[in-house]
Image 1 (tube, one colour):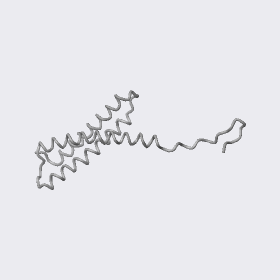
Image 2: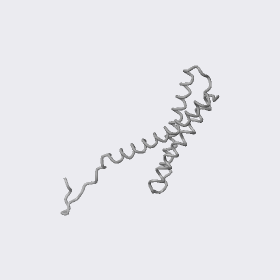
Image 3: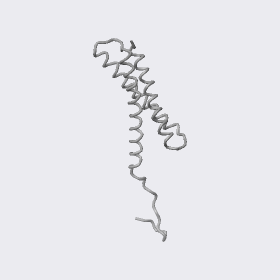
Image 4: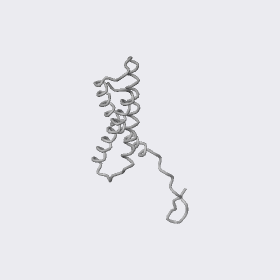
Length: 120
């Protein structure tokens, strides 16, 4: 039997692990230099996902009339949080790339023509 506080802390840890795994797999596949900011974003995303889903697990268990969470339900919940955090981080990363790619280009400074006049 797992109490509510332990359940939420465990879910946050599982979420961080899922976010880290997602970030590490993207890093290994990309061949880019290490960027700590990208990994930090994944850990934050995983922690928030774990906190939200851990709280949902506790609330759902309390609605069913149970005070503590059974170990088997908790194990399945932690595995679900781990996978969900990895998925949320992957979607967050892809959405960020999509937004950055489709953003309007910044207006360039006034261009001059070969005659030295400002372009219209």
